[in-house]
Amino acid sequence: MLDTIYQSIIAGNAPKAVEGVQQALEAGHPPGEILNRAMIAAMAEVGRRFEAQECFVPEMLIAARAMQEGLKVLRPHLVAADIKPVGKAVLGTVKGDLHDIGKNLVGMMLEGTGLEVLDLGVDVSPEQFVEAVQEHRPRFVGMSALLTTTMPGIRATIEALEEAGLRDQVTVMVGGAPVTQQFAEEVGADLYAPDASSAANRAKAALETA
Image (tube, rainbow, N blue to C red; front, side, top):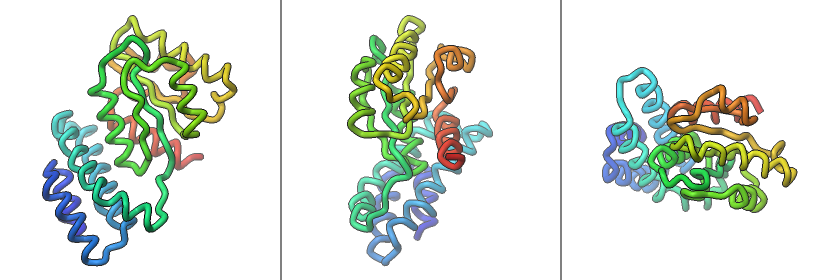
């Protein structure tokens, strides 16, 4: 039954994944077991295949959507069982930038590692990032910029977090087409991820070394 969920997510079959989660719950499988052994394991395999170039962004996207649909069914049961996420991540595309496909995929992949994701959307100002950190106390702040003209928004947000005394409380992850490792280092980000799979892997590694 767990294998059915696992295979359905990898195949991007959302209805089958939802059905599998419902059946597993009815059969008495603990919610945490369904999450970890089937759903998170499936997204880890999708990420491995992506990095090995055995699948590509469209396949990763439909797999992540299947996982999310299954998670909608599972989430109330996780709450009832008092199974908490491994941490929180606040995501947003920086001010002036309206691109969101990459950010959305990063959010899905981070959920696939067990993180709770709070997506602020696009055109997010430094002040909005600061307010979200103050309210939700996340472990990660993820920022994307898809235009070279909006990249300064990443620096401005990091500076705003510093001014608010919050910078040391979060791990800042950045990405987007024009963003590079060198730029990430220059603006003082903690992690740079060139794609959604590496974002999930680096967040997971950061959690494990905390």
